[in-house]
Length: 383
Ligand code: GLY
Image (cartoon, rainbow, N blue to C red):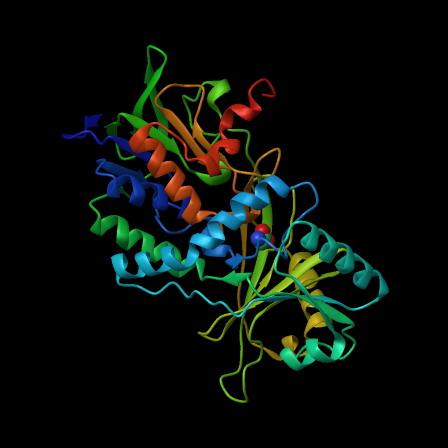
């Protein structure tokens, strides 16, 4: 194995959004930083719709995660401005808000309950009647009964975000190793870098595991330092909206149809993202007839005109889920090894706050207060 001539202070395993933002912030703190990924900017970000939706994606029992989600959402405008300036690239940030729609008495009751939770949590969430809902989005089905409007739930294009982070990292001096990390190097109870598939030995002062749902799979990880993350598959469709005749949709619309969540995320480019299944089927990423059928059937209930649109792409990706659906941010039980993984449904939303938290930790040794409840040691003893 050849060893790198000047060892980085920080080696990051995984060049998805979380690995890249961690590396960018670390480099801004003056740390020599490297990222290892065969295709940086890809991974789950290539599949994700990019909703920044702490309000309409709120689940009972996730109130602690909500605080982190809201902290990250609040940082998005300045994060986007800084990243677009640093990279010279746009990231497709849209701020028109989100509608969560009801079709029948059951949906209405469910949404009313969600609205009550929003109000208890002090969130920006407004109940709209059927007429007002269809005035905002005329392509919605005539049978719509009403909706919750979350004006603060926005979106970004994760593919553009990934490309911008690659560019910002490169400009900040981050070394990108376009290969796979095949093993963690450790001795005397401390991590000190990685072995790479191209034969490089990458010595590093600190190593950050940010490989999404594969973060626990790296060879050489002691069992107590392997993050408890698992893959949750999501199938996603991309359609093309017509250029003429006014906007097909202006904002994200979502609903629960036949017990399954469906969302439609319209981009300014004309792309319409329809997502997503949620499947505990291990590592496989096949697009299935059943998955496509479920998404199109439910999208058609929400917006009947959707079946007229060209279907451009079908994809499946793997969310990195943790036991409590919240991320693992901070030091692992193995000195020199840190975790930045387990973001499950919220990787795009949590990108700014994760970058800030990991950058601060790497530079100062301290996690900032908003991230302290998410340290990996909360799962100690449950492995
Ligand atoms: N946050 C959207 C999803 O996980 O499907």
